[in-house]
Image (cartoon, rainbow, N blue to C red; front, side, top):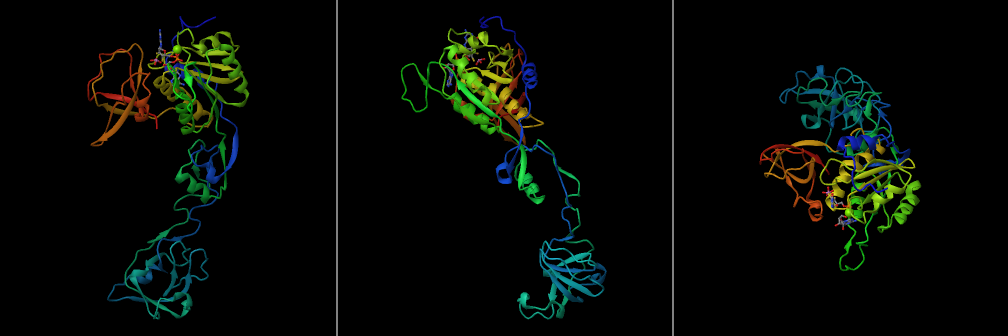
Length: 423
Ligand SMILES: Nc1nc2c(c(=O)[nH]1)N[C@H]1C(S)=C(S)[C@@H](COP(=O)(O)OP(=O)(O)OC[C@H]3O[C@@H](n4cnc5c(N)ncnc54)[C@H](O)[C@@H]3O)O[C@H]1N2
Ligand code: MOO
Ligand SMILES: [Mg+2]
């Protein structure tokens, strides 16, 4: 039974809800820390020690008792005995008592007894004729402190950054530079992440040539598969570009069915409208899967369809490049992100001022590929190019989708609109 006409239209939110019901996270896997960059953490990370775990000197200088140097000035320096030298990575051996100082390096543990560190530049080393400190017996030296430095100066206290037991990165967080530093700090040479969802991409249509083929009359090269693969990879999935399919529903059903066991999601592009050769419609009419929806109140991509087949999701995007791009952003992106354990799978919503008037009314909400710019602290947005779903070339200029509700009287320059980021 063909479902070309009389389809039931549902909203974008309803369509997403139907998809989300069928999504589960992929299984967890361990990867080496450098391979985890850009992935989403599959576990909470707790601190198993404080940072720092010792009182850390922030400067090269002398660890002293602040009360000993309260009266120090350049003209009246206080002279202290230097009792030891503390390089980073070592542990102080002695306690600083009245009249004592310990020469200390940046990052080294501050010795007991000392409550402040005076920068080297505010001191003079009395017995030092040259700077060959490594050959110096620190115990024979004295230091002149020329400045009164308050207690706690230049010292990061124990747990000054992180408390032991603290949640430092919650599950679902993308591992960027800051997370990488935290994971390394706490000894995670391997990291638990959700496996990258495997996404098979099929373009359909007898007009499609492979990228490497010569142009032929009436035919075009398959660009959607590569655009979609780039979108899949940008969102953390693993894209498998499958050979383009003809308009034969038997062949299409067989090809989709064959790959189904090996992937987490199938994306198709093309063949979902009312045309004679719109093959996905025929597949949906004959296969034993469950159709989740076949018409969405949105433009472009109104005929976007989805099905659950042998417990796998099949998302059938419109063939027009603009509609394929938008359909991916609205539906495939949050599916992939949910599989990866993201707590915020949908695109970030921002407000922007419309940079041009827009007077095309629409029966359905529009998602216009947009380009943003910031001027005087305000975000402005304009369509990335000709706003037609058949236009491919302007997709490269889009960094967001401009959302315009259905109906309305049109929009003036300066009107506030919602945008959804695509980068
Ligand atoms: N009588 C009607 N015609 C159309 C309607 C309608 O409601 N009534 N809807 C239009 C809308 S909206 C869209 S969107 C398209 C949807 O088309 P399909 O999803 O069926 O896609 P195709 O027919 O296969 O192709 C449409 C267009 O896109 C080009 N295409 C397809 N695949 C690729 C690819 N992999 N790479 C590059 N370009 C591709 C294809 O050559 C066509 O030009 O239907 C409207 N028609
Ligand atoms: O809705 Mo079509 O999907 O305009 O491009
Ligand atoms: Mg068609």
